[in-house]
Length: 133
Image 1: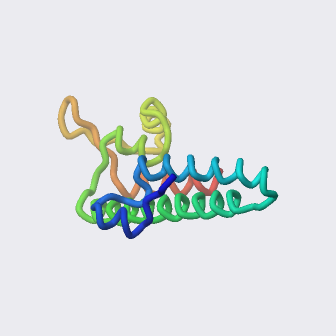
Image 2: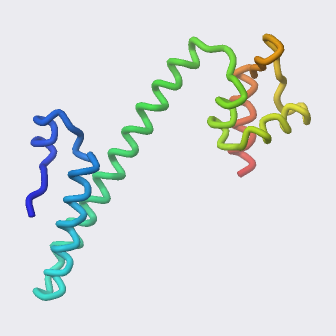
């Protein structure tokens, strides 16, 4: 079975961690591990470790890019909607409203159906939640 290398994936305009190449890599890894059992080698395990390392590194880079994008948006935005707060804090929407009732977040009504929360206040709450966890 042939797997796509990182340079081949870039030439095709795709990412190394594309679903198709990842599935082929995992299939190849399984074949190598089965072959290792017969041969008494560990090539498959080495390949698996490399595969996991690449996936982990790609995940870190994606997370870093997301955080950079979020910082740029935060420099422009001054308020978050309730759904954005829940996504950022990793809590449910009902918990956002509970925190609002408890006074941990101060809602600001822009209109009858639009309520927002100050970004700085949300960041403070995020820090509190991270310190408490």
